[in-house]
Image (tube, rainbow, N blue to C red; front, side, top):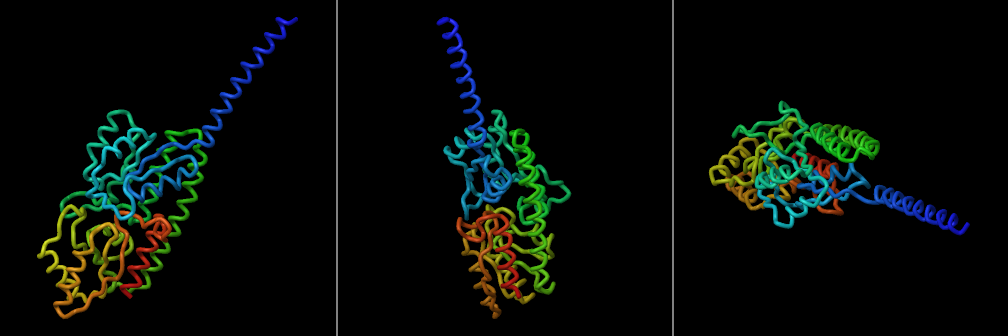
Length: 308
């Protein structure tokens, strides 16, 4: 009898152990978060929106950081190596990190390029025959980016597919509303005033989508310096078209735009610095521009209000 009771006791203990293990695994799935690394603030925000409570997102580049010039530190590489997934923009936005991504791919890490989900025919080609990487300034293209993130998360974590789909669908509605908001604000400006002058050529997608002529003092990448000839040519353009405001950018030193302002004023025409635009990063935490949607609204509000 004692022997039978002992056997029953052992069975119960083993059963409790299995149950505890299973329970622990379920808790891990519910409370644990997958480690995700995103290069830019825009992408980090997007992954947080779609992944929600299932992901812990770390961004390599904080607000105001220029991705064109960013070099990955040893700590950054280690962070990506230890993450479950890595998301990056691509199209040479992170120009100095291409080899890092290749090595991560070669070692079996899940590395996803946001721009891979965008039809090439919708990409803008620069004068240097390179694709413009600033895809987030066309809200409709950012919907494609959201799909890339959703699909990547589902492929990695099939168990939470319904959550990722629900978050994606809800966000697409918000992006549609954002697109309409931008259009409505732009319509407040007569076409003759829809000329946008910025620190570097980051707003071509914005211009082509929402009807602006765009000129940047520097090229698509901030790695290319603006020369005196560039300043002189753009100053002449501003005077000729009587453009009332030009804009600095949060991730680009403002000295070049200030030099442009001085050059315009020296020609007998006063041009104002209309405000700061967020080009290659979102705004700081706690501000309106800390999210992608907030950044797009902040930019269009700044542009329209200054050019009216």
